[in-house]
Figure 1: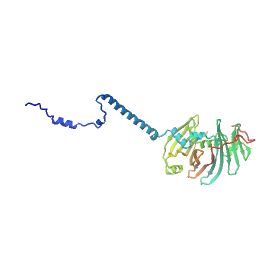
Figure 2: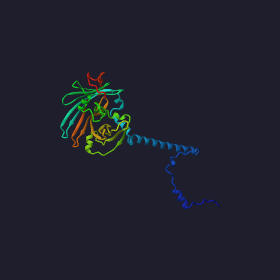
Figure 3: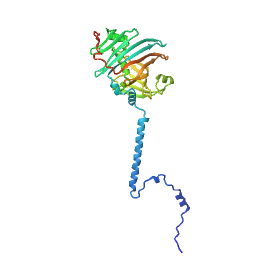
Figure 4: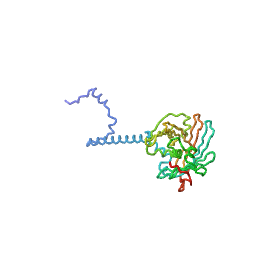
Length: 327
C-alpha cells in the first residue's frame, strides 16, 4: 500500500530551528491580531511618554539638586538666611551701638570708641545721625537735616567737618563729607540685603583653604562658598568677596577692595562672627581684623540693636545754633 511519507527534516535544518531564541520582550508585547498597527502606535506613544518623564525628572533633579547656583541665585539664598528681603524692607527706623576697639601688634588695647547710629529710611533717602563717645568721655554728635550737616561736642556747636575728622568719620577722598564713614558703616551693616540693589554683578569663585583659615571663619567648619561682587560702571568701582558658610548661608568673612581717587586698591579683610537674630534679622555682632602676626588689629562689636524703635519727629534736625555746612 502506497502511503505518502513526509520527508524527514535534515539534521542541519532541525539544528537551526533549535538555536532560534525568542526575544525577551516578546511576551511583554500587547498583541492584537485584529488591529496590530493601532497597538504598535500605542506602544510607541507609551515609550515616548516614558522617555519624556525621564527627561523631566532628570532636568528637575539637575536644576534643584545637582546644578551649582548662579551668583544671583546664591544672593537670594543668603538674603533669605539673613531674614529675607521683605523683613529688611519693613524696617523703617531704629538704632544700634558699635564699639570700636583698636589694638597694637602686641595685642595691647590702644583706643575704644562707642558710636550709636540712629537711622530712618524715607522716600527721600536715608537719614542718619551718629553719637560718638571716646576714651575722654566727650560726646560728639554729627547729623544732617534739610539745611546741611551739623555737629555738636558736649552739647556745644562745632564745625561738622572738623568734628567728623577728629572722630575718624571721614576718608581722604576729595568728595568726602562728615558722614562718609558713617554711611559706609550703615551700608555694611545692611549686608547682604544691599546685594539686591540695581547694578550688582555676582559670580561664584573657588579657592583652597587650610585648617587655620577655616577655624577663623567659624561656622560649620565646611569649606565656604565664595561670592564675588562688582558693580556696573555707572554704579561703582569697588569690589567685594564674601565667604559664606554652605550650611547656614551666613557671611563669615568679607574682603573689600576699594579703589581710591589716586587709583590705589586698598584691600580689607574682615571676619564676621557671633551671629545673632534681632527683630527678624540675623547678622554678625563682631567684626574682626588681624595683624599679619595673627594678633587682633581692631574689632567692631554690635550691641543695643533695636530695629523697631520709633524716633520722634524732628529727631534729625540740627541742635539750636549748630553751624551750617551745606554739603
